[in-house]
Length: 222
Image (cartoon, helix red, strand yellow):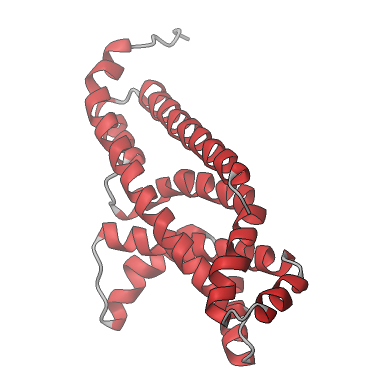
């Protein structure tokens, strides 16, 4: 049995392509983060509405997307929707699946944050003459965001790592590039190891940004 010979040259040859793939991973993750936050916040607000139908629809959406694997959701969007007449590119399919999956978790996080705000805040805002939308925007949401920010941060970090699954439908990002290079030069340890280091760097950078944002949020006046 011969010892494995680590080949630095394989990393050097593949590094430009891996860096390009890492940039695409950051891009699709960033877009998915923003859309998932907006959708999750909107659905959380709907879940607080007085009508039972809207609340049940939001609850059903959350249960379906939180209790099924993301990979299945990606396959349904990419392979299943064309049978219904909706054909999306690998990029849009992967993005849609990531947004819907992450938004389901964000919805629950925002909902918990909204419900954690003391009910007396609503009554005080109403007595001050604020309307429902003004209460939500200026009184409730700032407090709710402070409460749920750490959980949202963890969900965003998970989204970056879960983005690797979109490589299964041909979406060109870091994992797809790593697979392509590895299948061509058979230097699996070097290529996947480099990709793993890149994921660590991306996640650590995001974590630092989130901590800085959380610090500023906590220091901001209520």
